[in-house]
Length: 478
Ligand SMILES: *Cc1c(COP(=O)(O)O)cnc(C)c1O
Image 1: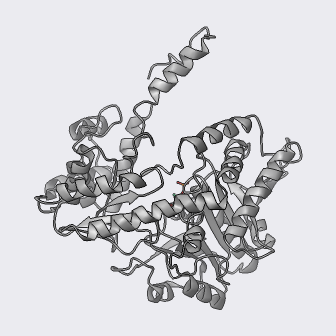
Image 2: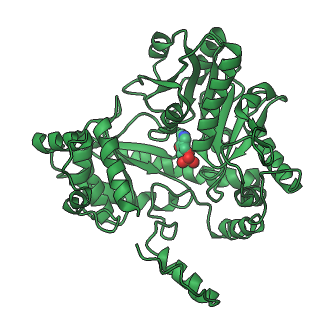
């Protein structure tokens, strides 16, 4: 990789540097045309302009030491307070600003691990029960923290966690139950009230992952959407995660981890005084902690207010209802489960779902092809937010055109899959770069026809998929 960004002599031509940066960003997915139905959660230009200025205002601050940056304390307390109220948390509840959903989830698992270490020291091999629809970051947390993740079945029709399977898999080493409100892939809320009762009965912690829905669902409830219980009103819920950088429409880098009380949060904190520098007491994984995502979120929330969010979330919900009804009216495709917000999984009835995704891509849409796992079939994920809500009608038109005449869904050819499985198991000799070229992946970009790649990965075992994707990513970065 060239190092032209690190010249011997710097340049004071700021405009030229910024111009190159803008050019660099030109091919990135953006909210410009409203055609992106994944990745983007956007409340529009006016909000973004304020966010940009407020982000810059936080740039030089460091939340590492709130005694030196009192604004860090105030910003965090304001943001956590707003979130706790939104989630109907009890008076004693507390929270932390983290860098994103993954960090909130890792810290929720760390809390459970360290809380169990003090309360149930006889447990040496702790485990948590994870519906197979729970976000992958929980398995990442399990991997990082030495907590075993035990996957729990979901109902093949509703996609909700099976409480029977939760009860069957719960054992003397279980320290944590997890439910989603809702799940990313299908937009479905797990039976949180039942999980809460079980957590209380068995003396377990219960984390509700509301990373994607925690900001949305209370507003939908205000709008009269019927929702099951999912928040701190359920007595057994001990922690919740809510990403402001998703449906809070704030710039990336901020999530809130809410804990039912201070004792739980103590198990989340980490401190160290056994070195020769400053003593650390860190609530999160970060050391130095940018204030920028906090100043931006602080500003955006004030600009929109509850009525502003209600309006935007109402638009997204109306568009979601229209989308779900529209998909139901198209022969050959169906929605998986019953989504409670703008997260919709669409699968085919026999046709090749990856070919359908390619056809949508060719028509100018950005969608998320997703592989089969457990009871969830291969599908296309659509995230609906205020920025793409006006485009749902046009998207449905294109879905209606793209669905007829799909080839039959087929697994990739057996020998090729076997070869990939062998490569993934380290049966050397495979040049990853050459393999990517074979797939048409060039300069880190997928080809416009992706169905063959997706069919292949979908046919591989999840383990092989993980290995291959790791090899691919390693090839992308110098
Ligand atoms: C996005 C998401 C996460 C992870 O959040 P990041 O901000 O991407 O790290 C966790 N859980 C759910 C349900 C999510 O949708």
